[in-house]
Length: 169
Image 1 (cartoon, rainbow, N blue to C red):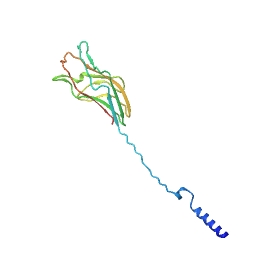
Image 2 (spheres, rainbow, N blue to C red):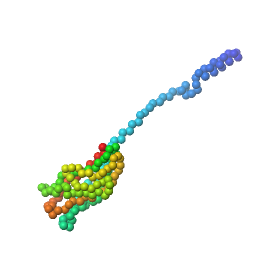
Image 3 (cartoon, rainbow, N blue to C red):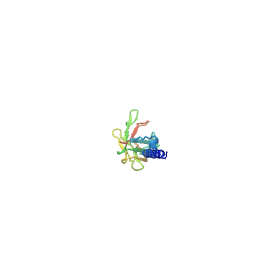
Image 4 (cartoon, rainbow, N blue to C red):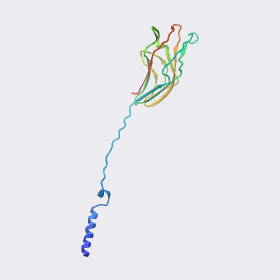
């Protein structure tokens, strides 16, 4: 009997040695990979503190330049791009009141600081309104608009539309 118990003990130890005592023997596990992808697109956001400009003309001898009542107009440009962003402005037409016309080139603006720049309005060629650096950023300044006054302007309410375009290539 002693030999039989000893044989069983040796057999049990031999079997136990062939099965390691870890969780893989007694349970299951699995793993899986997950690829992560992030897409960031170029973006451009432009805001102006005014949606219209009003010029109230007085005697040209007293007031050679007519400031916009809304001056200064705050401008905020936010861009995210690998390229060089641009801010430009163009007028849809001259200032018109019926058949009377004031050339849009009589409208000028100044900028309070870099990278924004002043200029003269055009209806044919977009005018650069800022020298923005390459890459992403947020830029804030103010524009001040003036209209040259002339005794040749006929009474009336003149209008046109100017459009700013901020691009982030």
